[in-house]
Length: 367
Image 1 (tube, rainbow, N blue to C red):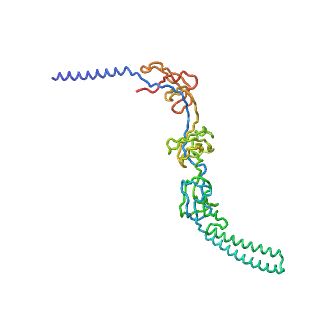
Image 2: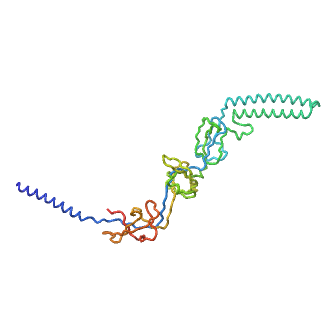
Image 3: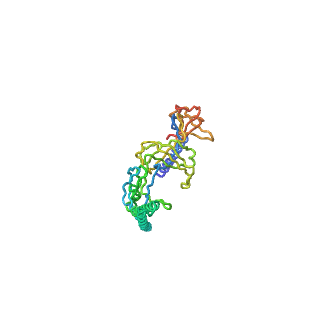
């Protein structure tokens, strides 16, 4: 019995040894590799770069008050269309104590001057009628009396402006009425009723009541890296794709390229402005993020192949041309080629070459 198990054990060991030997022998004979075949194509190759930026109106106007006070009424909201001269807000004037006191003092002085001029004029008039005074003196006192009356009227108007912000001589142009200075769309109204506002002066920019822009004249404003800025020129066409509008494709032309770089997180970039030419910009809104694609180089009607099948050796480039065995036992010939413009996926083949659209080239190894 023991002999039987001993024989069985050696038999199993021998079977394993022989099986391993056969397996290794079969695999040592090698595997014939098969490659996918690629055919060159004829078409257009473009090298492009992409600029990131946003859509902005060419001119964005900030409307500021001509007088300080408190907003009493707002007549527009973002999205409204306004014309030049339309009233967009009203201001209630809160006069300063010093200005109010000065205006009231001016009225008191003007009244005293007017009374003095009136008395002098009436006295001179009585003497002139009795032939005791000259015409020149009468006319001079009459003019002085008239100037005193004008001064009182101006003092009263000045008090009205300080107190109410309204002139008696120009009620339509009241400083309390904030008007649009351009025709366009209201982009923003950063104030509310009750907000204190101040007019623009030498020491302060003033409070912005509203921002208005012509939304039919839009530009793309983006940035390009310093390594590619020399490839751009004013007048180049670009295609604008707006992220918020699926499938959008707007035509634009580069207008300006900044002459000086700006530091963008450690990278030097240049600002680029492109004017949108498309008339179909009604869906665009200020602030939309967008990408601008610029065609840097273009080659038409060229034979091209996938760049992945190109083999590089020193300064030369090669492809492998199928000579036989399209399905199995493939054989290839190494052929030198001259490459041209590349878009990162396909590359153009230049000059006279044995490679045509009917050629079969070696691609990736098939599974």
